[in-house]
Image 1: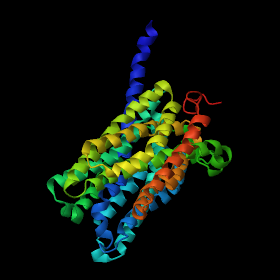
Image 2 (image 1 turned 135 degrees about the horizontal axis):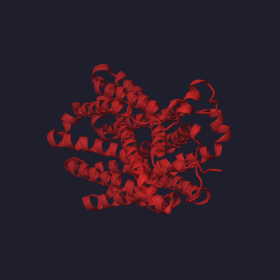
Image 3 (image 1 turned 120 degrees about the vertical axis):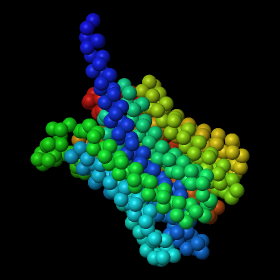
Image 4 (image 1 turned 180 degrees about the vertical axis):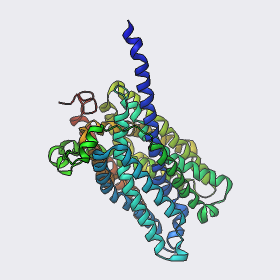
Length: 442
């Protein structure tokens, strides 16, 4: 009778420690993704600062730079994943947030094209490429850290905060824009308000830098010491990943493909559709809709993670896949036509309910695929490759489809990619069973 009484405090302490590490890890994720999304939220305002207002292709150029940053994500995933598997998750995450902060400050202070010509666009591209490099490292390493730091039985719920903060970064960017529009007019935001938005991201990243220094390290000290001595040859090794772990790497890529194209179509293109539909005098209405619906998506994540701990991860992924295949065409073709605020909100909210089947659990699903010594690299690289090919290109492809009148074809493309991932969810994943995180994989 005394054993439960003795162990209960220890269990509670472990839970508190797990929650503390989750919050510290997710705080950095929040800031890093704010820095990513402040670009898409404020793009319409700073476009004329980096490109001539007379250039009809300036919008395409802005989104081309957004897409180009995703080319750096696989490189960042390789560098930081290898680093994290050898020298620890905490140090890798601390370095990535430092790079992100520096680039946000650089964008904030870059002179406009009116003063330095084409150099303005060149500096913007350089800063965003570096941010893509940092983000590539952030995703895999933070997904790995938060999955490892979570307690068994609560991994789905706790690791869901990875996307709570990822979406939260977008919410903060939208909230920043809303606050500016409440006090300034659009010309002020376009002239210098967007610089303040990027500067906020840089300052917040410095705060997170200090928070991350106090996180517990989830990689065993013995593994780090072995890497320092050159004894852990397989840790963070590309040879190990592509020769001995190619199956989980391929699975990670295919799991991500449909999820990432849906995520950027729904959560980046979706708000842009609303922003366009409520342009002009209704700009505040569009901003409020976007802020509300993205907050709704953020709140859904823990619910999806909690549900996955009960019914299994596969069930949620299949729900997302079926919903995405059935609903994407309707969303892409009909949302831009909605000028009623309630209908626009509900249309995008339904898409976010479907999307939660993927976003709330994808971090832990991928982490469960890989053994510890290769986990950060495997999760990061598998995600980054799919993200670069299908996620980051979605806003650019949508803008191109709008310009050329091929929106239907874009909707079919997104649906097809989701369908491929759905096949993987149904036939190649198990709902529950042995996995590397629990140490029960055979």
